[in-house]
Each structure stands twice: as C-alpha cells, then as structure tokens.
Image (cartoon, rainbow, N blue to C red; front, side, top):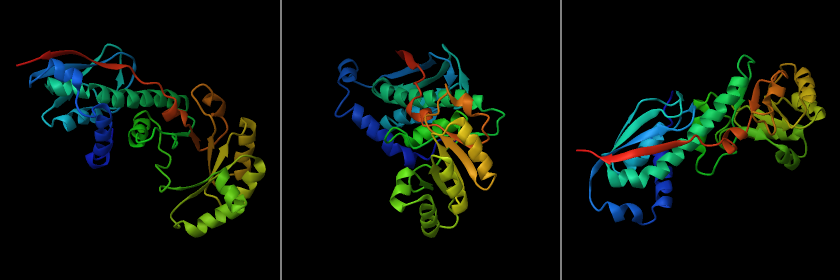
Length: 284
C-alpha cells in the first residue's frame, strides 16, 4: 500500500490539530507527570475492520518528540480484528498522553472510511465498475480521507477544484446550456483535460453527447433512466452515476452498465473504527 504523502504535505495539518488540542499546555498530564519518564503503550483494535492511517498516527507523536518510536504489527489495508494488538508506541510518557487523542482521531477516522469503502467496493466486485469518492470531505482532512478511500479499495475522483473540469447544474445555468458549458470548457481548459458534465435527464444526456463531453455524470436519475442513458451514450463518453449512493442502495445500480459510481457517503458518513491505546506503563 502506498504511503499517504510526504511529511511536507501533512505535517502542517497535523500540527494544527495538535494546536487545537493543546493551546498552551496539557494540564492533566503535567499535573501527574512533571518530568521525563520513558513509557510504552499498546495500540489495540476494538472492532473488526480495515486499518488505515498508521503513518499519520505515528507522525503525531514524532512531531511532539522526534525520539518517539512506534512499532506496528499490521500495515495499512490489513483486515484487523477486535482485540488485536496492532502495535506499541514508546517514548516520553508525557508525549504518549498528550498525543493520544489526536493520533487516535486520525487513525479511527481514516480506518472507518477504509472499512466502509471496503464494504461498498466488495459489492461492486466483478461488475467492472469503479467506486469513486467525492469532494464531500471534512475541511482540512481531505488528504487523509481520500487516502483512506484508496486503502479501502476505492478510487479518488478529482482532488480539488484545480484538479479537473466537472460542470455541474449551476455551471450549466451560468453558461446557459449544456452545449455552451462544454464548448466554453473546451476553449478554456488545456486539451489534455477531460470535460465531465453532470446531467439530470435524458434530454441533457443527448445534448452532452452531441457537445462532445468526455465523461457524462448521471445525477439522481432512476436505474431505468440510467440504463437508457448508457444506451444513448453508446460508448461515446465515459459514464458515471451519482446521487445519494450508499452501501444500503448501491446494489440497485450494479446492472446499469456505467463505468464509475461516485459516493459522498464514503467520506461523509463512514463511522469511525473503534481503536484504543491501553496499558500505558513506565519502562527502563
């Protein structure tokens, strides 16, 4: 599994999270631990799932004290079981205590997304459809959440607004029509960029095909309408369906023949994976 990214891209976000949790000092820790004592704590999974974010978890403690060491007995993408010992963290007990919540917040959130994504991706196995995420991410968490989607077996749609052309309903309204929106995008965007456009009915599908869109997103259409849209498009553009797609209803979409299914639920509705740090103790 690929590492999430370089520390240059992530460190400032992790530091902001630490500043949010420790505005001046950790009063509780400083009250009971007034000087350096080397300690060790166990990382224990309390729920079955897919683990994601171990490097981020480790980095939280390293940013508090570069001498902190983490040893893991699993890797991102592994299936983990309730009760499993996933690793140990060793270092200044004050650092282990102060970094615990931020580190676990990242690991629980990312592992929850990976677990949910995995369960949805499994439902598409053998269909030839790719499961995509969206930009419906937690502010300042996108790089972590989109990484977790990949760990879980999904694929990333565009990372941000600078990453690709996607003309949605309000872009079409601003341009005046599907045809005008596609034409303007082709004139403005570099020729290497694909033009994707969101459509809501079959008339818009026909217009998008004739306008030369590269990808046509079928938004909030019925399965029957989407099947007809795929027939109309007939391979002249790639196809994506979207609109409140969740694990509970994705099964109705597996037979419509689109290339991609996008789901905001992968990042905005995945529950956390329950993970804890236990058995903290001093060591020689």
